Length: 188
Image: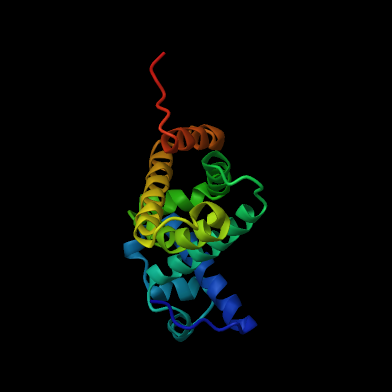
């Protein structure tokens, strides 16, 4: 999907300008109505530079989300406890910092892109940070386990954004942990 990305500082800078321009334009108009030329004009670049780095506008979003996922992964590295509550607390605290971006994805019916990226990162994160727990899982179980949790947390994130991000990350982490541990919240 993605071109081989150059680590050349000029190329990195150009990609960042393209990402920033697309996000700025998405705040002003629907994603589908944004032309590549508008992105490059806003970024002060030529169309050729866009196509040297990306194949589509969607790929620009994939790269931005990938950068965000790498940022989130660094936050997981600081965890001592890999319990459902602590992992999802970090996850929702991280995304709380990026609510404007989540709103842009939601507003433009592009939230599914986040799920696709999450599905790519989840196995790595689970294996890297929960290896001790998962080493005895068979491959088939592990495959469905990561898909289940990726989709579940993605749906929670989507519902949170859709609902105006009213709940705190702590509340969401508690709900996720209780779901994972099969502890339903009963009406009072």
